[in-house]
Image (cartoon, rainbow, N blue to C red):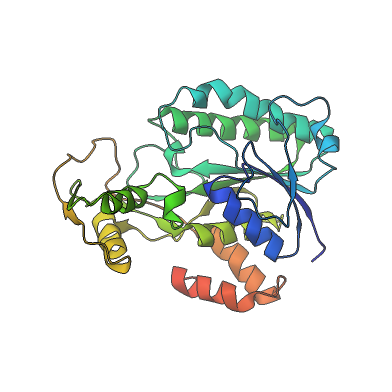
Length: 303
């Protein structure tokens, strides 16, 4: 495969750092953009660039990239921050500027929160009824780009993420809070029933799925970057406590289960299965054994 020039916005963020490293390991040229690039892999071309206040044609200013992976998003862990709605038109304008300038492939990070309350598997045709400002903004951006793409005809991928863990001091998940509580010497961690089931994926595995998705342009549209299997929150958290040899105990029932949380929600992984299996069969990236290990873990059938 030819070496691609890939712009990654939000490159210094929780997911961005891992994706940048993965793309660099695959020998692609990465232009890493963020307001904080302190922890970005030094092999990348690092740019201090305000994507929401460009001086002209963004596509040309960024060196006419082959792909843009748009991960940047303010207050991603604060689901009812006003910033989601305030910045929505700026995300739309940024992507349109790139496309009008000549970009032919754009991939944007989505979220299961676009869908809102849903029981069972999510695919690209699942109706969206988001219940947070974060979900509303993500869903609106996706739908807007789908409409624009009818006339501008660029290659669009909406990479929908689910429940992410790993590198747990770098995010704001329950796993982060557990580590912080343990560090503070707390003996108990207030918890819900933990019966809700989610689609958990390690951030490094997510980075690999994202990378495999954008480095091909045959599978487009909404792509669920996930494992495709629901796991009870309590089981995942108890596993985390055991694997990290934490002493803290869960205090079940300290918080009520939130009525807007889905009892079971996970991704239909048909598209990412196709992408991974194609990469394995063609061994395009020289990482066949790594992809086969991922495939076995996720229960993908090799063909």
